[in-house]
Amino acid sequence: MIDPQADTLLQTMRANARAMPDDTAEWLRGYRAQLDGLPQFQGPAPDIDVVDTTGPGGIVLRAYRPRPGVLPTVLFCHGGGFVAGTLRGYDIPLRWLALRSGWQVVAVDYRVAPEHPYPAGPDDCRAALRFLGDGGLGADAGRLSVAGDSAGGLLATLLAREAGDLRLALQVLLYPNTDLRQDTPHASRPEFDGTVIRLPELYRSLALYLGATDRTRPDVSPLLAPDLSGLCPALLITNEHDPLRDEAEAYGARLRDAGVPVEHERMPGMIHGALQYGAVVDAGDRLITRVADALRAA
Image 1 (cartoon, rainbow, N blue to C red):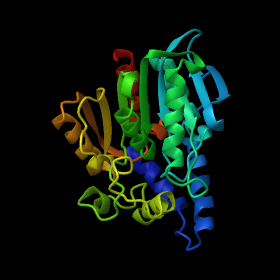
Image 2: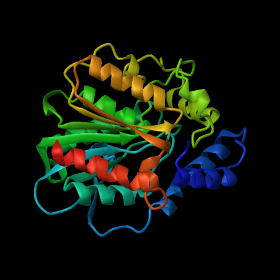
Image 3: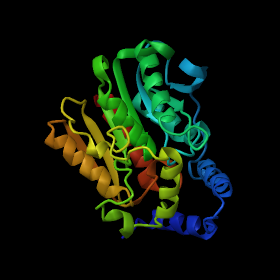
């Protein structure tokens, strides 16, 4: 059963949804506008020090700083199917995350497809993490973590696997994509098709992002990575009513099998995108606190 507050929100989304246009450019404009409208479900923005800077290669980084000085820092990669998502769309929940955790939260405005297909987005996130590892934005290189939701959760898995000498404290994976193959055994995809994520839109966005790229590559489908041993601890959050649920939970199982400490919570009754709904769905606000608690303990 869907959480009643989430169901009310879902019905609003469905009432405002349009049929997917055949024209890719028209669809992309509408999809991006839809994601940019999510702040209406997030409430007023709390006051915090916000610093925008240009990182390596011209990447825009936005830092939410709960206090001055050198700070433990989490790099956040936004969702959006690798074709959408902006700093604005995540501004309010990331403000709350920084205030509740005491960690600096740095959002990376990585490049998206089709203007910048794979591997532009992953490359931007890699560069942003290296920048923080070198002490950029007052980050404490000894207390770094990575986080992301949906497509950004996949990018966070990539950063955790490639961290090398950085020795990350935590990887926060919020209902991540982990398998970008279209033909998969994950039953939650057809079961919850249309519950926020519509599969035709998912597959269109992945085609724009990947083109002819081999979808079994570990940096494309982390679920298929041959070795996950030695990674930092993970907080994995999944939603009961989410097309991405099964692939995310399969990745969590693979992490555990590789000896990685994993805290997993499946949010009962919840739908994809919980982080974005804090003002209208109580579970979305609780999710921010859950992540903040994990960061404080890391």
